[in-house]
Length: 112
Image (cartoon, rainbow, N blue to C red; front, side, top):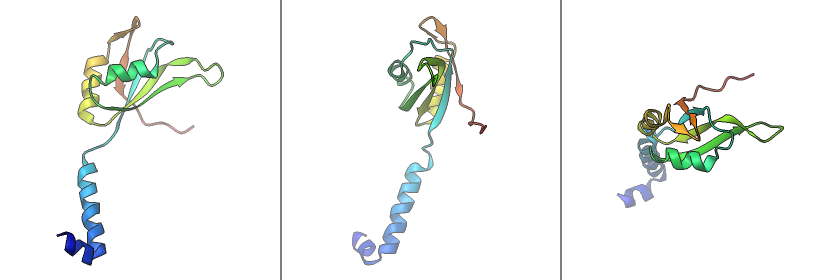
C-alpha cells in the first residue's frame, strides 16, 4: 500500500487526512466551570484533584487584573466528555479548603 500512496501523492494525503479525522472525530475538549474556590487555591491543586477523573489539558484560575488575586473560580479543560461527566459527579459539592465546590459544564463566553 505504501508504494501506491507514493505513486499518487494526492491519494496519500486523502488517506492520511481520513485517518486523522477518524482519530480526532470523538475527541473534543470539554471545559468545566469550577466555582466557590478559596482565594488560595492554585492551578496545580486543581489539576491534581481533577486528574483523578481523567485527563486534564488546561487549568485557568481566573484572577483580578489589578490585584492579581484569585476571583474564586476557574476553568478546567478535559479531553473526554466521559471524564468531564465523571469530574462533575465527583467534585460538584466537594469540599476543598473548607469551600463547597460548584462544578458544571462551562457556558460559552458571551461577547461584551
